[in-house]
Amino acid sequence: MEENVILSVKNLKQYFEFKSAYVKAVNGVSFDVKKGEILALAGESGCGKSTTAKCIMGLNRITSGEIYFKGNKISDRNVYRAHSKDIHKNLQIVFQDSASALNPKMRIKDIIAEPLRANNICTSQAALDKRVESLMEQTGLDLIYKDRYPYELSGGQRQRAAIARSISTSPDLIIADEPIASLDVSIQAQIVNLFKRLQREHGFSFIFIAHDLSVVKYISDRTAVMLKGRIVEMAPTTELFKNPLHGYTKALISAVPLPDPIYERNKKILEYDFSEFNENGRLTEVLPEHFVYK
Amino acid sequence: MPALLEISDFSLSFDTPYGEIDAVRNVNLKLNRGEILSLAGESGCGKTVLCKSVMKLLPKNTRVKSGKIVFNGTDITGCTEKQMRSIRGSKIAMVFQDPMTSLNPTVPVGRQIAEVCLRHEKLSRKEAENRAVRLMAEAGIENAEERFAQQPHFFSGGQRQRCVIAIALAANPEIILADEPTTALDVTVQAKILDLFVDIKNKTGVSIIFVSHDLGVAARIADRVSIMYAGKIVETGTAEEIFYDARHPYTWGLLSAMPYFAQRGNDLMSIPGYPPVLINIPECDAFAPRNPNALKIDFEQEPPEFYVSPTHSAATWLLDKRAPNVLPPDFIQRRRNEQWKKM
Image (cartoon, helix red, strand yellow):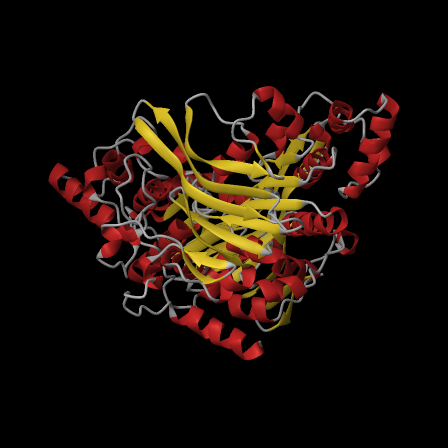
């Protein structure tokens, strides 16, 4: 295993049984996340991006495949248990809907302190308080919200609390599953800036799951486009947007409406013919670092 | 030619236990025949309430404080529920955000479309059903005849929205109010639904008010754009005027916050703070606390509408003769210059 790879997913499959048939939610996904890198998983609803995240977090019992976190094969339950302390501290997730991700009966300060308590990071109450305050400051949450409950905060502020919680244990990898999808444009920009700043300061690796390609283009170092439980194209972000090779990626990029009316009126939206999709294809390196499914 | 729909000086509030919420404040809005007007703004700015007040679909604690809504030359502000029923659906139709909640889950979609035809026109059941099949095909549903008898859960999100659009079209309305109709959809599906709206407009000449929080969507579909903030329309203009020559600091902020305009590696320019709560709004520019370039007068007096061109107006003191020369963000200046060169 390469030194600077923090997470490695190999041929991950997750099938769900449904009326004696299988829904192949994730169907053979492989990728690596390097240290300090922002990898985006992009795709439309139902393409398997959230399921991939849940598999990495160990929230699903995966059908087959391997997941290595810092060289340990955490897809194996025994290995997971042996390293559970390390995994719980160093692998964190931020969900889309902060209203349901935060316990409504806990105060904001307790929500942020919970991972610190569970991982025995702060031993004294004073140190814990100090740490929580510093986390709230880092994520731009006013300290008056310390004793408030989640429902008393707006969506943007709640998402800040969820982010404060996820970075509280100084993790090595954070998975953010559509963290800005339910927010307003101006608040989205605030949260995206926050992620970028925190990533710069703490140097954690980051899997950013999103359907909004304009945000992906802006934030990520590398992008993987998913369709039907597979990665159809993966490349460094600038390369992917400059030179999309898979038909679906092209269609997806052309469908994003841009704030330029004259351009938009003359734009022809490309369509992807799903009959072209090869069920038995594989991801191959077409150009250096640029993988296409065919 | 007079406008098809004209809302003038319209204010509306809700009585709540916490106080009076001023959801819509002194709104002036015109919708011309055969155009798509996009109403854009953040959540809670009053876009939906404004649409629903045209349809009179508001709860009992609503208080209309001033203004009138004139449709086709007649004032509909004072219409009774009975009179409204002959307008809703047949003259003005509405498409809501979530197609799952606006369709009845137990009734086949074809029957839901035929129901509207029967209600508003003298047709036999058979004729109405044929009409419904035709409408479904027009709205882009393949095998319309077979799908006529299926319940909504057989349809995907995009197809459901197509059914809702077919219902809206059923009685040949003059106006369609589309309230975030593509927000719940994927981008590739969204692109098709947006094209469908433009298609329908070109074919039937219907006027559309298209509510959206996504300025990209507004750019794709709209002839004219109105930007709303805290219950007020702060800027109105043609799509070109808004996207290439915006004048209101809030519009600048909204555009700046889009990743499209950001340079990789730089921060996104976000609007600081959060939108205001609409209770006891002070008599000043509601955007002033979030505006880094706010003038002293912004905190003292509400700005009137200033006209930049006959079609372009903005409510900001920056357009006053006495105002200092505050320049818009670089990328907007750049875009304006590029557009001037082309024209």
